[in-house]
Image (cartoon, rainbow over all chains, first blue to last red):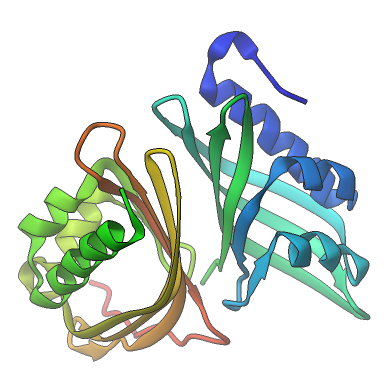
Length: 128
Length: 131
């Protein structure tokens, strides 16, 4: 999906971020494949790094049961760069373990010609 | 902008952190700059610059290594390891973190938009005196 939203980059990125979060929740690999840039990099809440293929394939052993976001802050820089920061509260199964995390997440979106792609995502665990 | 030019900017950032050089840090960062710390706190640019005022934060060594930089148009995204020896309010605040830096050159001069730190394994924060 290429969004237009009247050329408002912030609104376009918000739609794509929502679509990305839904795809994560439902392990929708086709949508993730489309939204994520080929040179995507991620840093998890314990510092591990996954590339695009590793990120999408992790859904074979990691499944969200709930993924709620709050404190959403969308900032755009020109027409081609956006950073979405939010707080994510999730419940998930990682292999056989139930996990529940609250994390601060930053997502970097860049517009490649016609379409925005997610180039980076990073998680930091929320401290006390 | 090339990866080498981004590396030169990052070296200026690294040396400014160790020197507590807030004028250079101010110059290197965009007004909307945000830092997300290893425990999820967010600092605005003024809050981030203020870390060095009054001797609250002292960074004695900072290594920025294993850096992989991707440049797309006027945006650069660097992923690396941030290894610091520091103290905050006199208490050790050493740590090794994985980090992403986002740089942008849309306004002419390239500036940092974002730094985020994630612990590698577990991280014990320094105890902070609260008034």
